[in-house]
Image (cartoon, rainbow, N blue to C red; front, side):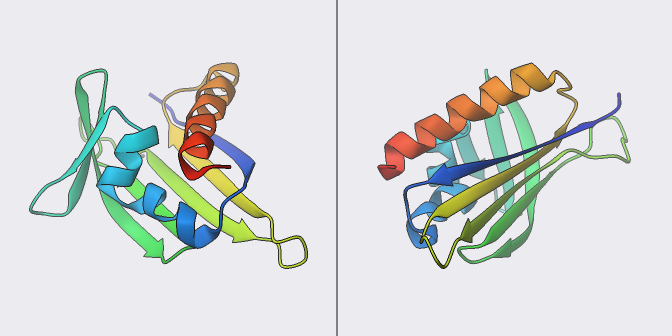
Length: 129
């Protein structure tokens, strides 16, 4: 099945330092992004949605700036899904922005807009912004 790349940017009322632990740690991600998140001995993140496990490797990270999770391909797929979170702060306004890149099989843009809006609203409630 082919993948669809969805990109969105959200203004957050939280500093990058406050926001980042919710983007790169299992406990932080479990609070807003997935039903549960665990890390195994091989440093794979296991995202659980509706009782189904989706394994991913934290493929790159830059503290308080960027994190990318590459999901383990299923059935020998070469084109694997990934999620990226980028945090930027506008120097003049001190506004923080969260950019999300979701590359997955979910291809209904309307559903993705609603999904990410709800997820980010939950994150905003947690970080107070």
